[in-house]
Image (cartoon, rainbow, N blue to C red; front, side, top):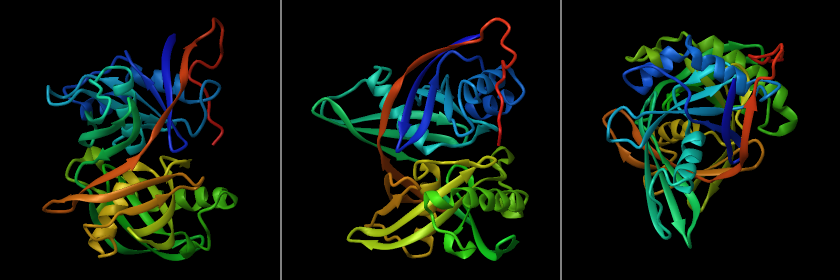
Length: 327
């Protein structure tokens, strides 16, 4: 087994891009379902887990688009499987597609990269000046509130949790409601309570969507309210997704989901932007780009940077072809 990758990070969160992995399906959504039990899952484990990756590694397999309306498709993956959405990955893919010439670049202006993901069709709007990418705007699928004020008993007391959709289903609550702050010193406890809440609500009726392939709680977003800036609300969050992975970035699809919630609650006006910080102090900004029948179309702005390129190979006799996880 031998695979070449190009590694990027968006606001600190890794994104490993891989081309040529065999996947089957009529569209990206069905390719994701088939990948769970197909050869692509062996490649995911090989590249994601130790000793070639780590428990918080993230990446994507480039696939054909669903039709000619998109530039390409992608299967997002993590240590536990394949996710339905990924905003930080979309931002990285936009920068990558322009840099590698997969999508025509402009020296000054905007290059639009259209990508099919399991939750729908999204865009990375790559902002360029002086021949360089300066930022990338992730335009997401419709995001909406699924349920408000779910009272949930936890090991840290009964809390009120909201369920929201931003391409994946998230549970969200103030970190203070479980006696924590979004800071590195609290990471272990943030992971523990994030996992507890995710699994407690995974089968909640509000988390069961019309397209069952999108159902279930993907992650828990714990939030610190930092007040307001001149342009709108300012918050810091940590997203604990899959089974205990910590997003180093402010989480792209999670930020989109938070935009839907803040808009619905009147805390984010249409002319304002959300300033959204991460556990490590990196930042996205986000806004409502349009309203829909059931929610909003969010746009999340961030930046991705290339880390390097690697070739991973399975040495003869290696006893760990599918890696291992200690979490």
